Length: 398
Image (cartoon, rainbow, N blue to C red; front, side, top):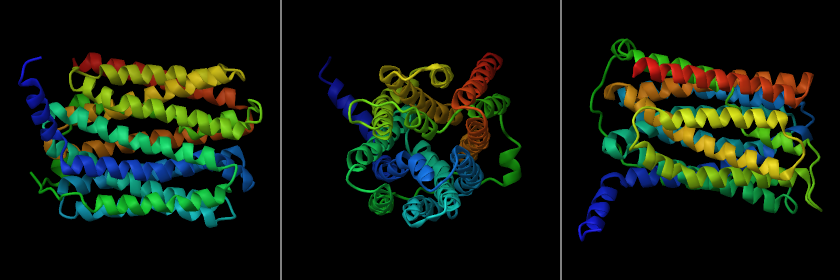
């Protein structure tokens, strides 16, 4: 490499490694640390409170619906931009409210608190993603999203790992209370985010009537796939209820460690995926993620009690999640007008949330009334149909 290569690389990094990208990345790390600690413990915590498996589906479904509604609203706030910075901070504050689950003794309160937390996630998500897309040159947006996802998932690694290492010594209720610590750090970090001025303010009527046809097709395919995009808590519950043991290791601890593996792969893959996505046209990586996810969900329907098989499925799910989370945002940014970027991101988050509401309720119902294998098989079918729909949208818009 020539003498200017390192200098050019350093210049490129300065173009996209901005104060806001770093702040959002660090905030994602601490936010997900606390969030994933609670998520990893939640299936067992619900069962300990006397809740049926359907309660997990209800919790995931209702909170995802709230996130969907808040995402649409957050996207509109982002594009109108008059008060979006305050909404951004409030969203991170609300996300930390999940620590109050440590006080509940009746499982419906878990639904309420998780829903409030997910409302905060929904409201802040499009604003955060729009900030990054507005500040970073277009050719580096995938890398910026990938870096934030990597930090996000590093926190998602620390959360279940902390739970797995401490659950033998500290009660799940106490660990959930401890999630308040990274939540407070998150808010302190997000206060460092630099406000960005609005490049344009559109009326709701103009913004919502100007969607390109490829984006409308993409949005529909995303909604279909989302009905098979299960929350990873179902994977945790699947292992936990399978009675798999390895020496003195309980199925609950094994499930937490496998979920940690899921997040290790997710964290390790997110930035490389973003780097590759910036250099590929279309939605190639998104199609790869959809296909891999569909196979993973089908695998959970077919797999027996082999720890090696569980590990392979959790690792593949982590890679698929990395592909989907990064490529989906980048595809949205590429398909919508710049002035409607926040609303586009919010709409994709919303259709995902509505689809995941259906996924959670269907999975919880089938798990309770039949068995988990049937539920995973049905969910896999939604994912495969969503993959087919996305392939069709790529062909139609190419």
